[in-house]
Length: 277
Image (cartoon, rainbow, N blue to C red; front, side, top):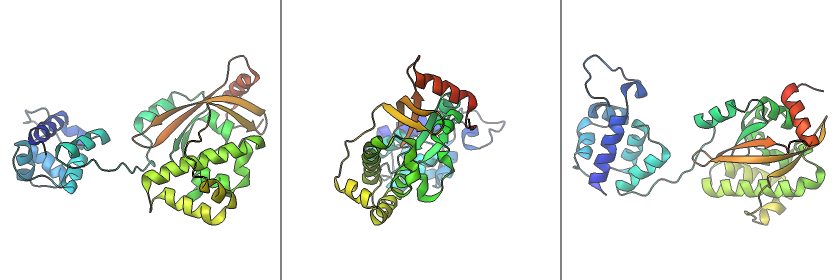
């Protein structure tokens, strides 16, 4: 435990927070720019004396439960939370992440891509958000519920989910989806949603059992993809991926080489959206 580093880190983060940031009134008599120690203590669910002693480099080493409460109370990022644990003499918690909530920064990027096919996926292949051209290109994948929200699950249980790709590309996509699910399963462990999907597929799909038994984690999609659109036929696209590791989300942006037939098809989709041709 590095008492000096812990005290300094807590103080700087406390002073950086404004009352408005945590839903507190500023009040007419407030002089300090940041939060008071007693305010942070209340936010963290601990006594003001206990918190003050940490900033004064006194008292016992805080437990992991106390540090987790401090991280929440001070609105720390994951990197800041990990640093707090380390300077307090604990190992950083394992990042078993839930990706239901779309990262605000990722959302702002998607909002600026409204004329481009783009979508945000979780580590389980769940579509969290799609632009209108993405719905036109890929279909409305945000409509699913339960395990069917996962493209991996649909791939091995619903044959219609494969119509989006040419049949000769199906084996590669199946291996990639299984490899991505294995990575999520290894990170989240037993009892996770990833584990539930794995167990369900092992029970229902012979094909998945064979692919899963290969234990392949190195198979990945290439940037080049072929989309089998029901009206426009094959569209060759480049898929660029922006990964947000803190939330296990990925932003996929689909483009085509200018001057090609596929480029013209994407331009048409950006105009008509998901209307039927």
